[in-house]
Amino acid sequence: MKSQGLSRRRFLQLSATFAGVAALSACVAPQSGGTPAAGGEAAAPAGEKTQLSFGHTWEAAFQPHQDEFDSKYLETHPDLEFNKTYNTWGDHNQIVPTWAAANTLPDVIYVHGRYAFPWNHEGIMISTQEQIDNDPDFDVKGIWEEALRLYNYQGSQYEIPYDHGPIIMGYNKDLFDAGGVAYPDENWTTDDFLEAAKALTKENQWGYGGYYNGTVGLGNEQGIALVGPWGGEIFDEADTKLLLDSEECAAALQWWADLIHVHKVAPLPAEAQAIPNAPWVSGQTATFALASWGTPTLISFAEFKWDVVPWPKGPTSQRTGSFGSGFGITRDSKNVDAAWQYLASYLSVEGMEFMWGASGRGSPARKEAYQSWLDSEGAPEHAQYYLDALEKYAVTGHPYQTLAGGEILDIFNRNTDLVQTGDLTVEAAIAAIMADGTPVLEDAAAKLKG
Image (cartoon, rainbow, N blue to C red; front, side):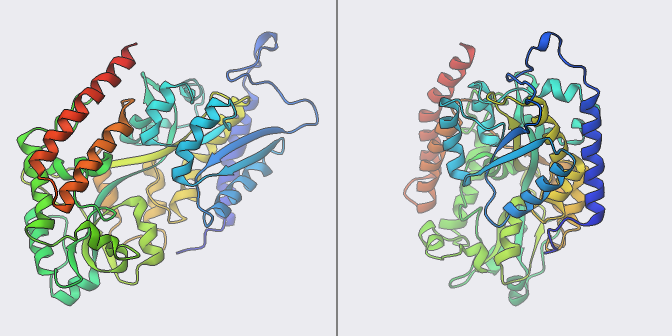
């Protein structure tokens, strides 16, 4: 991959952006009567720096990149001082509610799309709609609508996405070459996919490796990618009703389950788990579902040639799921204006290009920043197919508008896990999910109504 260092050209671009935001903030009229702004904001005493705190989830290898961005920002904002906490992704989603209970939330935190709705409903986060409306330099329309919808609560934009990506298909070029099978192209179908998977399956090698080892799953971006090509839907648009008991969903899930148990072109869970680096990373699967944020894993660890291709067209349509992550301002922030000014730079075109595009991290939420990722060293040759999916056939995977998201996903997982091991039929799994999940969604909808 290319160096993640901040070039002189990028520094000048970012400095111009930061200076513009600083100039804009200088034009904002002070509030009358000395009343603090939203979040209890008040100016720091003369000579003291304003403190901004952050809750991040970056792994150790990416933290210097974050520090580099912040250092350049602070050069043009010497009145600020940053305090950063880094959690693991899993820990973060458990720690945030404990921060909220203790009223010690950082000013700005990472928010995964799965957690935005409950955190917004619970008052952990605040709306940024007023800041967006009053900041003419922040082009919210340049962010994909599918990305923004994850963070819209009761008609108001709360968090701002930095990343939003679809699932498409990755493939191992070395295995295709060794098997004498032509590479897939943009016109391939689920029938073509199955034919190639059969041809490339042999002992300790499978034609399909699933999505992070899971061949049958219903969570967010994966669920709609599996049933969508058959015309199925898992939820209604408001996440108040399960639609899984349709003929289309049953046919789709049976087709994917058959990859394991009938055609035997996908590994059983125990087989996949026995391989330390996972079959798709170790080079033992010819194809695998690959979200844009999964590409850095292959860039770092794959010892084979690989590329990507569109998600295959199904019997009724071409459809896949997408999902993402963002940042927002918490209700405990005492420096909302300064927090917004930072986010406006961080999530600008230039900010996304530096943080997630040119760095090779992948899938910036702005189309204008996407080319920086497509041009980054290590990006797959046909990374353009991710952009094509976002613009043509990817949809944001439900659930993301219910307080029962976690409970519903648990119900999904315990049933689809048994389908994959062969201990439960698709028909029985759908019946169990409908029976267990329907009252959960109904109770969550009732809570929202008060």
